[in-house]
Amino acid sequence: MLHLQLETDPRWAKLAESNIEEILTDHAWCEQKAATSAITLITQNPEYPDMVTELLEIAREELEHFQMVHDIIKARGYELGPERKDSYVHQLFKFMNKGGNRIQRMVDKLLLSAMIEARSCERFKLLSNTIKDKELSKFYYDLMVSEASHYTTFITFARTYGKGVNVEKRWKELVTFESEIIKSYGTGDSLHG
Amino acid sequence: MLHLQLETDPRWAKLAESNIEEILTDHAWCEQKAATSAITLITQNPEYPDMVTELLEIAREELEHFQMVHDIIKARGYELGPERKDSYVHQLFKFMNKGGNRIQRMVDKLLLSAMIEARSCERFKLLSNTIKDKELSKFYYDLMVSEASHYTTFITFARTYGKGVNVEKRWKELVTFESEIIKSYGTGDSLHG
Image (cartoon, rainbow over the protein chains, first blue to last red):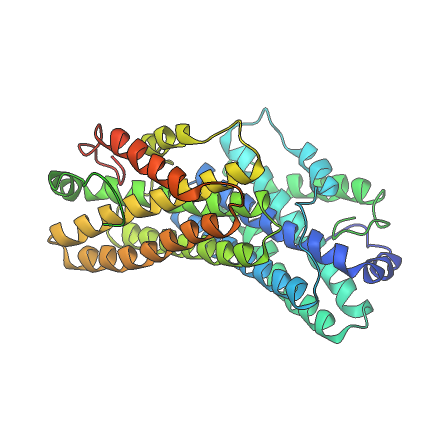
């Protein structure tokens, strides 16, 4: 789905289901990171009013998702626990053209955000289709819909404001780059694990 | 109001009114910093579910305030412009007991957040009472009410979870510390200027 080159092994969702407390904790922190990342994009690119407007909406939505996951964690008597690292995202960020100009860096950051949303979306769909817990299955279905629209927003802004950047080429490079990274994932009890 | 030792010189509001575009921009970035700060408090103190719940609500509200300020900026044909530094907050953070234990640092961060809300609140009230622009006068009145409740939330959590810390004493120290800092402010065209 959504242009990803490699689909997640369905066994990952079974593994996730067997340790749902850890998945929920990791997921809550993913939402925090997504909110923080949207805020960072705003501080780095304040000159695009329509993008700032959309990113503020996304940041608020990610915090709302954090609240929803946190509410589930509390209702089940689980513990949120310390922030989890996201090694998949860490690896993915090596794609960033750090030597590029400001526009190139903005495009890369938007494309990386789009990619993380796309992969999260794929994982949410897999979780929704696999896990037997009806509340969580519905929850992950709803999130899948929401994150799919974020993916579109990020990639659209990259196309709109990526003046002088071959955005389609860069996106294809990222899709290939991501497919190499994701090969070594699919066996961890985290959202991008 | 709200235990502040020193009131802002009313002339500050006149100055602010004469450069409302700059005040709105600075204010928008203050809301961003407040949201980011609440998120940081969550990542540093995930073990208090009720505090995480409240801080998520506050972070979302601050982003909503950012949206409101940004909407005013757009409607008036102003520009958001780059992130503004906040030298008042920067000075205030020197109060932090960096050598303290985790609880002491948490208490200090909560008290500093309470203080920034209290001072912002005082400035909002002054703006609301002074400026002739009716839309902004009402806007700043509403924000004053909202930020006053945040002040209470921060100080209450410091009291609730500051085990082994003399929170009242520390707060009094901060009130004195702040009153010294604020003496050199009141002449700048920013929210805490």
